[in-house]
Amino acid sequence: MTIHIIIDGYNLIRQSSELAALDRKALEFGRDALVDLLASYKKIKPHRITVVFDGTMEPSLYGSRDQIKGIAIRYSHGGESADDVIRQMARREKEKALVVSSDREVMNAAESAGATVMDSCAFEDKLVMTRYFSMKGSEEPDELSGWIPTTRKKGPSRRLSKKKRKAQARLRKL
Image (cartoon, rainbow, N blue to C red; front, side, top):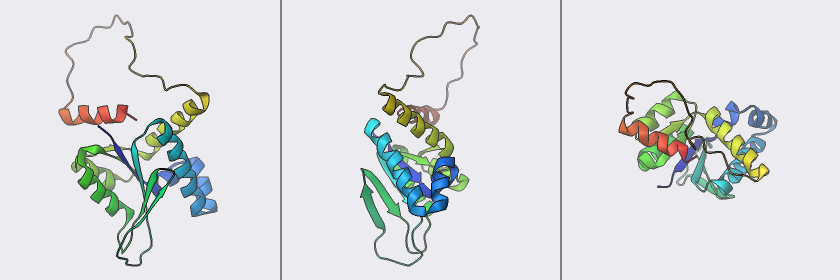
């Protein structure tokens, strides 16, 4: 099952110290740096990625859409915010979507639509780790590989709900 990663663009840029510094110089620098980071991530993990930015407040018939380095870029239009576009995409994609945002309202709406959500800072950490391993030339270590011996006794484990198990499986694919 493929994952469609839907990213709240300006939210991720402003949560990141590296990207926020570029964003303060010019909006284009922050956007370009984010697209470059996502393009390097996409080379290793071929998930479908869409970044949504706030566009102009002028009404238009068609949303501004772009494709750069394999990353789909959407701008909101006609008085709607990027958050509205993300909510619509999450409702359309349902469990295939992974929404990246630190905005609580967006996260709650996406989760209620059946999408998996991830905080912007956690996703940035994943991007940085992937970039590090791509430069190093090795694969990411599998966090769940191997059994760790322990003498600690455990009682009966409580199984997560099916929805949470599916969400964890999608997050492990990142």
